Length: 429
Image (cartoon, rainbow, N blue to C red; front, side, top):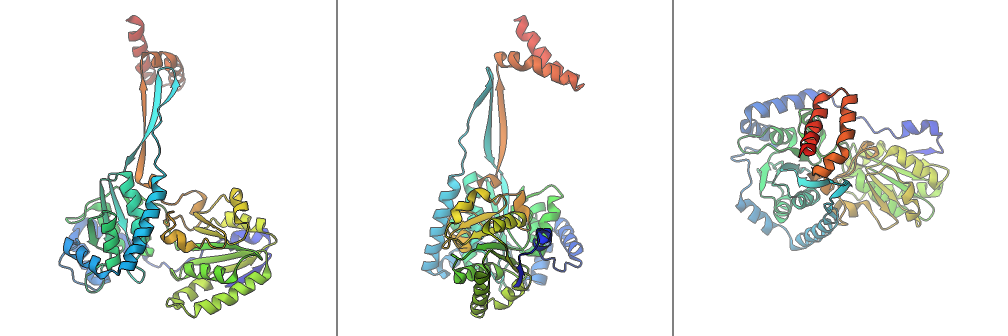
């Protein structure tokens, strides 16, 4: 990691920039895939499975036998761990259900808002070197709680034409039965447009590589909703003299191992903590199976020494991290000062891995600075809020004259007339 000591605030905007990786021809490649799937449907999906996944598929949809086989393949201790995570995520997301309240804004005028599940949603689950079965819990559970009527899942097959058993087990556990062996931009296209096998959906969720991310960006422009703008994973850790350098290094590496384009930032008011953490990074890095990936991520990452923890918080708010860890003894003292972050982890023992798997919060979070204006996935992500109003005769009499005046002032006579006719009818009775 490159170290910066007390940089001027005028340089902070440079320090918060995310790495820009080479994306030559990305747009053209993804646009061609989207068009191909839209026009040729399943035929295109079989072609891309052979081209990108190196497998020749006979069918796209997973059947019940494959799910049963996956259940038997998975060790019981992993099943128990997934079940524990499921319970915590369910508990947290259930608490987000809003009670419907009818508000009488004026005598005779009642207004309320009702949450209605998005009818058809699609979940994309990466299945390559890191099969993210935990993301099924994060997306499938709130989708079920929201009352989404149709939930479909796409994940890329391996060379043998199978999906990772942990993905199949977890999908079945949360009640998802429509599972398809499709990965990459072609999976996003299939869910956006629909094919002979895969139903069209109204909103698409889930992380992925640059091709998946670009496909989601493009289909959003065509009217299909997505969870949020996505980018590479990131974490910012704030540390002081009370922090444990071993823990801090482990947290930085847990994010760096996601991908070569991940970014990790260490911010501290203590030079010794920075030096000790960097020494720990070297030590722990050598033990990681994904060492080569983490090393590349560290090359585009930073350690920054500032004058105080308050300055560290200020820098973090400017950076707007996907994950923020305040690894200090008094971390809770800073809660009110945090304005931009996807998910926050307070204290020495609140590792980012807890939120990724089993604490209960959602790990699908805004990256690339979008935490300034986006929230992470929640129950609300899977519902629409529909407003209702019910006016009786007294209600329209009470607010009708004001509506008439406002409509007339805007030059919208038909709006005014819709009220005037009703008031005349009431007054003539």
